[in-house]
Length: 147
Image (cartoon, rainbow, N blue to C red):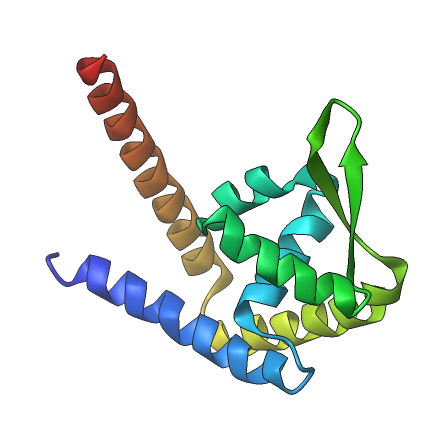
């Protein structure tokens, strides 16, 4: 059991590394594809919200957004509720790139989960979900105890 967290982390790392190599053929870095995927799923995020979701410093994200904006993949629009903030959108020009990244992700998933019984994958999905629930509950208890 003591090696299980390590094995989970190493598996996630191997998947990220494999995807990074594939995405690099399209000229996209890990940081960039993470931004594009997140904004595709949740358009209109403020930069500070996106930085929090990606667990990066706002200044770091700002530089990534600058590069994506220069390439025409992301646009900043003023936040109507806060003139100091920007809302982020993936541009129409970026859609072919995002689609290619999705295809790479689908290929990676197919390769990674080849020859694994779908019922085993469902059990694993449920188990991982329960682990996340347990961790969130533990954090909530600690937070409540410190207040």
